[in-house]
Length: 243
Image (tube, helix red, strand yellow):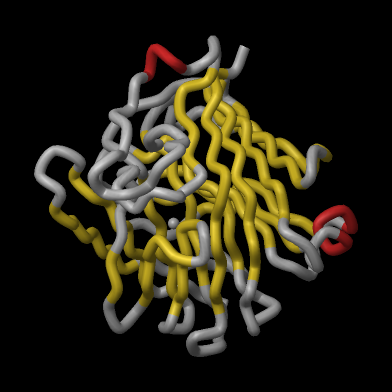
């Protein structure tokens, strides 16, 4: 499969407007490809608490259960994809074949972090690809992304603006395939020149690359050849500092 388009859906927190970035890319291999506030007790518009980073435990940078639609993640729907707060999480639907969409929670720059996310895959396409973005270089298509498909495929990929994606490492894992029938807990270490992927607490693989040493974080979903075949809901985002 060749990915032909990517789209970043990012909301500007200060002005609450949506900004869309689309870049044409070609990819050489299969299946590729896309914090937010606190965990409020009351999600009604008149009683949402203001996020206070001083309340986070040491090492915890951000967390979000997506129960409040104003927690900061970029959202939007067009003919190619949809990213919206729905079904108790951040739901991504990819309508266009060979397309990737991702969302970021803020414009902050992070370095040496671990990202954790729960993924509920409702895709009809078994080649749907989904996972975590890190070290995004501002509002661009330059970043690392690592993800999985339900049949056990995984990949670490480096994206650069206007260039062909570079597959840093890919493979297949029985641990991923055996976890595909239930929500997947995915983790990614991103720092110190390495990327390390985890599924349900089990380390899947690691790869070294130091092209991007810091940047933004996010989550993504990508399609293969099936139109409207990718539907993924993300929940329980946690961002922590690597030791």
